[in-house]
Every structure is written in structure tokens, then in C-alpha cells.
Image (cartoon, rainbow, N blue to C red; front, side, top):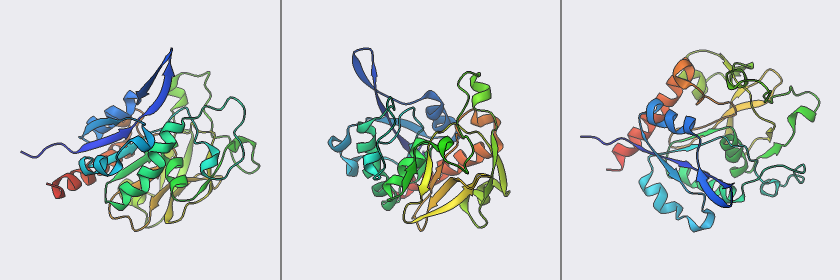
Length: 251
């Protein structure tokens, strides 16, 4: 009997009370378990203490999640963050070296929101820290005073690039997506190819060109109530299938 593929989900390191916890949002775990039909395994944000080679030997896929924290600007040569910005240096130290190593090893990777930004930085790209303050860009933030159903509701359209992986998965050239981010791609990392743009021109998705396996980053949140969204269902199914192929080839 074939086993379920094992998909690693790098955790946030967050202070809860007086103790640090390594945690992942339930919506991501469920999207892997149900949407990708895989076994989700949380990966602690141990930075250099984590043996990446051993991790990738057992992982059949990686999901990089969104988070309330932002990547520390020192990783992409950006200016200091605004006062009060939440950072997670342990997650940075775990995911930024992990991403190119995983993709080079042929491990399927799906990166969402912060994970999308991590992938861009891991490949040498830079970020805009406060999009809403930059002329020419729309305000991509959610209204935190509204219910979650509204915050994660459709916010704008994205145009999928001709010949791209997402257009092939979606079977169409446009999608309605949610929008819950302050930051965005400034310069695209090397070896990355645009997959989708917002109406204001902001890059909303990319792939790692010539990656040996599935390697996609999305700025929006397909994991949110993925069962109700036809595109999200086929996206996680495609990610799961790529992870199953990886699991079969490593036996």
C-alpha cells in the first residue's frame, strides 16, 4: 500500500505568555491534509540547528505559509522596518536557506504570502515594505475591523501569464483572489518567472523557472476555505500529486 506523501510546513516561532512556541495556522494544515491528501508535519524554526539535508530526505513537499511577521530587511538590503513591525528571525534563518536547497533537490514547494516573499528573497529579490504608501499601487491590505469572511473575500482580479503553470492549472486566464498583505515584490529574484499580476501591475505569483518539480509562490491566500474555491482545490490537488510523485520516486 502506498503511503501518503509527507509535506513539511515550517513553523513560526512566537512568544505566547512567557514561553516560545513553534506554530502553524490550522487552515494551512487542513489544506495539506485534505486539499493535497498528504501528511502535514510541522518543521520547527530552528535555523542553523536544523539539518536541512536530513529534513529534505524525508519530506516529499514543502508548504511555506503566511504569517503576521515580516522578513527582516537585512536579508534583502532594504531599509529598517517601521517601528512595531513583527519579525521572526528564526523563521527567516530556517526558510531562506531551505527554499533553494529544497527546489534544487526536486522537492515540490508551494509558497503563500510570507512564503512567497521568502521565496523571492531566497532567490535574491527585494521587497516593498509598505505598498499602500507607494504611488501607483493599490492598497492590498485587509480591513481588520471586518469579519474574517470579509477580510478573506475576493478583493481583486489577477491576470495569469500565457504559458504559465497557474494558467494551466486554472484552465483560464483570470482569477478573483483575496488580498491581505502590506508588502510585495520590488525586484523579482533571479530564476523566477512571473505567473500572475494584479491590475496595478504588482506581481502576485511566480514560479521557479526550470525547477525540476512543482515550485510556485502566490501572494494571496488559496488555503482559506479552499474547499469552496474551484481554483484552490485544483491547486492543492496539483501540489499533492507532485508530492506523491516525489514520494514514489524516493522509495
